[in-house]
Length: 451
Image 1 (cartoon, rainbow, N blue to C red):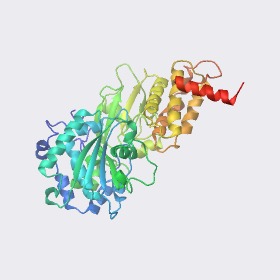
Image 2 (image 1 turned 90 degrees about the horizontal axis):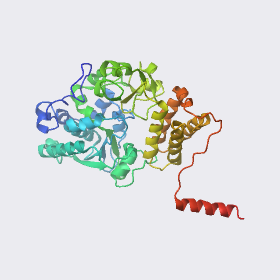
Image 3 (image 1 turned 60 degrees about the horizontal axis):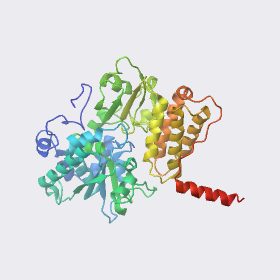
Image 4 (image 1 turned 45 degrees about the vertical axis):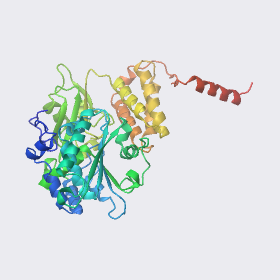
């Protein structure tokens, strides 16, 4: 995809170059592995300091300062340290990591070499969802090339440092984008989040200190080491809280959907209008998810907001993975709301009752509402269900359902009320039960109420 005039490509630099995924092109035309060469000569703490000073934050959604995360790794635990690249990319609307893996796989490997040098890791994994077939193929080929060139393996480039890297496939579960669920899956167990503490930095993969970073986060590290922390900070809003560039994935009702690398803090209005060409002919913007389907909706009147972690947080939403999903005035918000809840009900791992039951009931009530079978009371029941989910589970999947649903009801309540039945009382939402379960329930009733 050719660069837009307003883009400032750093992470995506060279993505349009023919055969950019090969080692030959990456080295000779894109200056590949110079950052890794520098990192191999630096002291681990010096690498961490540079990354801290750059203001680089986790670009997979959490936004936690990367250098700080690395500094949590204990120095003398006596255990192996593992580095994991989270390439699961399961957030609806997100497709930036896929592009990097398909076109610039060596940039990820180079970033992992730098990160491994910083945290003293000798083993790394790239956890990729199994549907991304081309990305998997390109990453495996790139790793093979890197081994042959001496960038991976024992005594890398004569530095005395070792680093082995393996691609591990996920089965396509959204929950495995959460770092502890990812670690469980990596270990061969069911992908379910762990209670914290202990945090992965102390006890992660195989009970050892572990760092999990997103594809884009790791891909930025080589350029930071080569150009300096101050250079990276100035790419964004020149503050430690909004440094560097960000790859926004834009989909939905715009004229030019795609992925764009822009200064972190570019306004949503500028992204959808100046970069993406505005609404489709004859349409008007209605709303947008600013950070994937788990982020609370912004109305068209709220588009003049900076797309960075703190600015969006102040608006009651979040940047997340930077997946901007745009909705125009044709879209039914209740239907969008129902589809959002359906996704999270399907993807819940079922470990926590508020999530397992709350997402299901939220979806079922919204389904009835869209069909015109619900009442106003049901709208309030959805809000109550979401309030009982948010902040009450091991991970934030239930929050990921509750936050956008409640934002849609709050900001577009008139649309929800326009499709309900006029009755004052709602009908109970009964789940389907198997014949065996129905027989068991009948037995229980008979024992409670013997004739």
